[in-house]
Amino acid sequence: MAYPQRVLIIEDELLVALDIEETVQLLGYTVVGSAGNPWEAKDLYFQHLPSIVICDVNLHAEQDGIDLMKELYKIQSCQVVFLTAYHDEKTINRSLELPNSQYLVKPFNANQLKATLQLATAKTGPSANSPDFLSSRELEIIRQLADGKTMHEIADVLNLSYHTVTTHTKNIRRKMEVHSNLDVVAVAFKNKWI
Image (cartoon, rainbow, N blue to C red; front, side, top):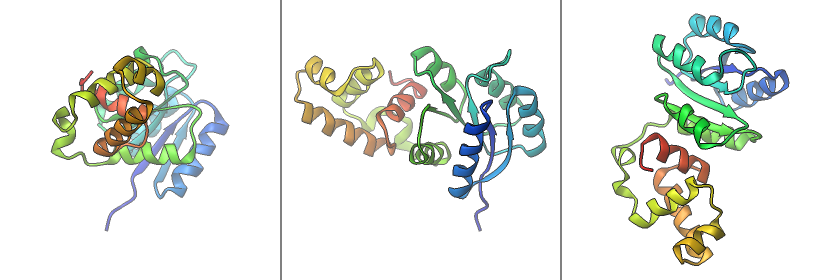
């Protein structure tokens, strides 16, 4: 029998934390606690040693969520989903320096949270560790996505039709087993493909 994943939520906005907690429980995970600052988070982390931590990047404290999770990860590894209103390259790169990390840009809905949690807990096959399963054209499209280009801009840059670019991105998501172009870029950054 599989036991539910134990989730710790670290979010300084109470209403957001409550919404996440409700959604996570509806998805079948066990919430072991919710912390509003790094000090509470450390206490709960050491008490429960969660398998997944959902952590806001900006905790409005001296220590941000990324640095907090780097510190906690040294004690006990876990899957991490960073929540952020920022999707600049620096924040993405910092969040993905931690092994087993994903990120989700605010605002997000229940389906996006579900997909990100599934991605965080998924067992990746050997093909997912290497870009060999992606064509050179697909890798170029991922690079363009990482540069923040829209589908139309990518089509113009690569001299392709809009339809061709959208077909490529659908195939990329299918091959990588992710649900959004943002997840594609996150995995590519994490694996240093781009």
